[in-house]
Length: 534
Image (tube, rainbow, N blue to C red):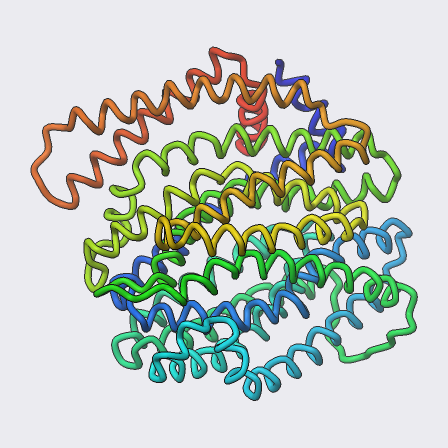
């Protein structure tokens, strides 16, 4: 495959190859930095609170309001906003664009305020439903309710930030949306370090409020420069608003399925007994944060950059080009995620020990988190592919199919988790999630292939075979280096160097093998890097 071919392929799947390359490079760099800071944030939290009941209380106290926010505002906006704006921008009517965006922002503000107020009232009822195991511990239940109320406030600012990001990305402006999460993470880390020792786990909730507010205001100048004007006007009879409302209902249903499916694990983990220093809810959350870091760094960057182009292709009715775009995304996910998945499965324990084992996070917590990480890491490829596949459905305004398949997955996930947690403990809950991820993505791909008339399946399979071979070679090298050891003194720093050196050598072998095997995505990576430096 030549660089010219790569340029042609990217050009056919997006509004412009150069814009996509630069946007992908910027977003990838910022996302890497943000995810790394996110891991630093988790490291700080682990050192201060370990895998304790307090940390478990925060997990539930965060995800309950996050679920509500995703359902009512943030997630729905990210799904329906960009396709709606793409339709308006296709008519090149700036006045209409200002009207639609002002009304959408007004809806975010009004619904967000109502959400915060309602959250203060209903928190005592929501928490026992989300974590029934906490009811037996009144102190933990009260703490979780208090944290839930605080986090509803941060969800208001998070929703406003999602609106700003969606608006700017719809206009192919990626710089401010890429920087804003960095601001959030830095302020949240500093706030946790300052407030955590003084206020306990409540300090973490306060730090999140500060961070999410800063994440929105960091994008405010770019919003104004892009033509957005703040105002509070709501007219639901406007055609674009009716379109948003029509798309929002199935989008909410789809998000409810996705979020409930993600929450099934925490629900069942709350029922497991707490062993000294290790709460199952906290262990599951730490493992999930590690597993999601590469997904966020790699897969979400690919899906986010491709989505505006997907929406434009769908609006133009060019399903063949949309299928090629989806194929590029899937092959990129395989190329990027398969070696990460294998590496985390083989070396979960040293990874967890390196990241978290300090302060209140003891060796017992390391064992529990590593077991969960192995189970999650097995499904990193379908977890990552899900973001690309669902973006294709959303670009087609097809929310019904992900909803229908997801509903079945919720039931399957619950059944598997209920069985496997009594066999494998908390790791069984993570294993249930991974099994369901494979089944869900397989079904969505089969249905999407029929809708688009093909996804270059032979090309994907051929690429997969080469990537698997390169991954096996890389893992053999990593294992040999880890087993052989390095002439280093004992200690945590030496263990970190050993792991990084082994991983670095394995990465070099993987890329070298991919070049030798003529894996197409290596040329795509070269083209993107070359355009970034030009």
